[in-house]
Amino acid sequence: MSASYEPQSPSREATEHYTVGIDFGTLSGRAVVVRVRDGQEMGSAVHEYRHRVIDERLPGHDVPLPPDWALQHPEDWRDVLREAVPAALAQAGVPVAQVIGIATDFTACTVLPTLPDGTPLALTPEYAGQPHAWPKLWKHHSAQGQADRINALAHERKEPWINRYGGKISAEWQYAKALQVLEEDPDTYGACARWIEAADWIVWQLTGEESRNACTAGYKGIHQDGSYPSEEYLGALHPDFADFARTRLEHPLAALGSRVGSLTAQAAAWTGLPTGIAVAAGNVDAHVTAPAAQAVESGQLLAIMGTSTCHVLNGDRLAGVPGICGVVDGGIIDGAYGYEAGQSAVGDIFAWWLRQGVPADYLAEAEDNEEDLHSLLTRKCAGQPVGAHGLVALDWMNGNRSVLVDHHLSGVLVGLTLDTRPEDVYRALLEATAFGTRVIVEAFESSGVPVTEFVVAGGLKKNALLMQIYADVLQRPVSLAESEQGPALGAAIHAAVAAGGHPDVRAAAAAMGRMRRHAYLPDPDRAGAYDQLFAAYRDLHDLFGTGSEPLLHRLRRQRNEARTAAASGLL
Image 1: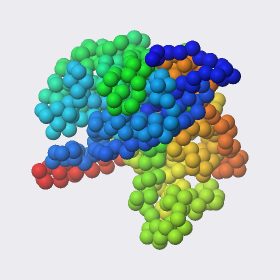
Image 2: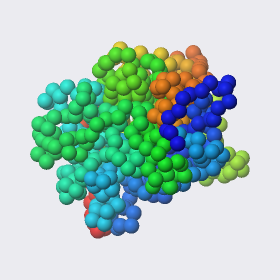
Image 3: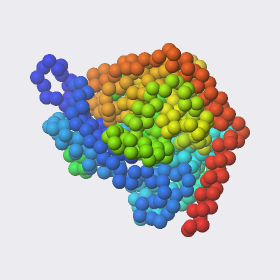
Image 4: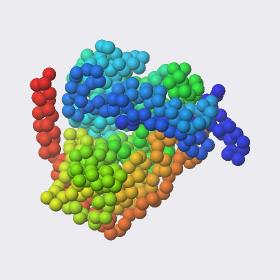
């Protein structure tokens, strides 16, 4: 069958066409089958990764991992193709021959070293026992030292690209992680022929050909104005790093929504889809969600809220915004400057408190009422007046992605008394994430990048208390993406464009995306009270987050030294 077709009016009797979008998350992958005409989601399925996040020992090897490591298993990703896609197709019940395209999105920066043919080093007998051969998940934060040196040298040399990233390159991104491999395991680095985002690697599995997308290259690969950092700069970081971009990254970049290949026979056998259908360029989970939420116009700030939060925003001009994750021309949608910021932990923080801070009598109450712990703590704290718990927290349990860009920072909770209850802490943590978002919004607006609408996608939009807190803290309405599978739907929208079902991403977003505008409105009284709490948050933010050597850095260093010494004693 042809991978393209002429769109037809819904009023005419015509064969429907469908696309498949696949979202590769931190703990699972999900596939959705979507009708091209109107974005109707016909079927979906989730596959939980068997290895989840690898942060203690390598699978099948007695190799302990150091602190702040987070790896993944490439076979878990291929299992999503084998399991979730056929299950979604079965649930959808649509004729498979009418599926015209497939697209994917991924967490970023999740990156891996491969052989020239794309075989992950982690899956080779020679390197399976080497931790640096495994894919580094976005939350792998042990390359902070390399990131600090990358940033210091960039400012020393006045590299023009550093300002496109708010003045700091993150430890989460490609260069810090690759430099860590070179310095800590030069043999594995030498065996690495291609250093590739998982977003592009999974497309390689679908098409049989390497491709690189403009989104991950721009935000995570320091590709600006048509080039990567110079070999002179990279060589000054380490002599053997000089050719890193040229030999391990360089490849023509594909625009978002473009067709980069066709589904191979092998991938068709995995997925149950027709051989030869269109495969779209890879993408990042946050950025691909914008069309699903109909948040593609300048000024619409989309927060994709889950285990972490990524904030993406289109603007009509280029501006320097301190501490952002990057600004890329066409990084979200063609014809606009795409800005990115983020918080390294949000839902993960709430889940941490449920694991650590809920006593036995609360557990029994939840069981008796047949409610989950989130519902229990929400019910207990929802009616509190703002500030009644007497607490303020910093949302840095997994470091700070914006605007400090420092993954050696850690969480802070102040105001505890013997009267503090579990629900008080829970609400303070909800509020802390809203305060962190307000810092980001204010950074954009103070830099001349207006935020005209705040839109939320992701699993946390179902928490009504959290959404109301965000409306009150931000003092602006909160709109909601309607789809429960925002990234996967966004990927399916890009697949529709790649297959010729819509002329461009904007048109596809208008037809296939959904958004409920102003679902939550700020309350003036609560907003005023939150101004006072936010002032306290900013005081803590500056006290613990800045300075030549923040206290939190000293605590992190002491922790890592103690853990490393203890682990060495066990070997």
